Length: 194
Ligand code: URA
Image 1: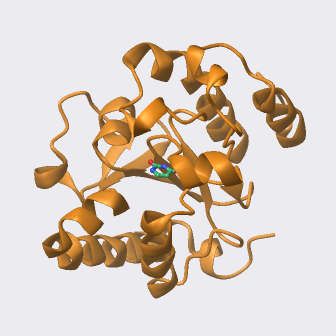
Image 2: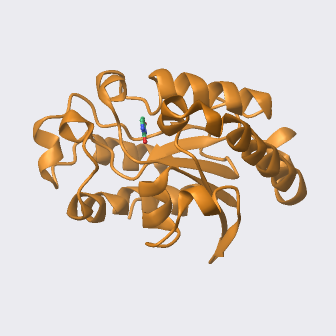
């Protein structure tokens, strides 16, 4: 467990604990404000993320940024974005359970340092790993689940919305639900985050 962010990043960038290190171009540690009260957690880097070293920078990322902007959230200012696995699974396959298990210590360390109040899980893989293994994203998206100190919300993955644009109104409604909760329990997100 690292006690500061720079140390964590430095060590994460050199991680070789699972086979994904063999094919990666970059370790995608995360992006955002380490003082954020709201974290977004996806599944793992895709091709663009692997090449650029930042989460959600492809087409799905552009859509995510649009929806974030609509509720005054900004990856550079008032949230933090990370993934369950930090290295791209070849051909964008789902990360294997053992890869998730190996990698999640980095995410746990990030969560411990950031201490968010709300964690948004983007997509099934993230929500099933972090909330409950039998979570049904189509049924339970937009709901809050209390886990320890955190309020957790599953949302549709941006790539799923791109594949299935009729999910857009529901996805947008979830962002509005999130905005309301932020105003209620962590209004500093919109005012005085350092
Ligand atoms: N999909 C994810 O789950 N995470 C990313 O960073 C990019 C695509």
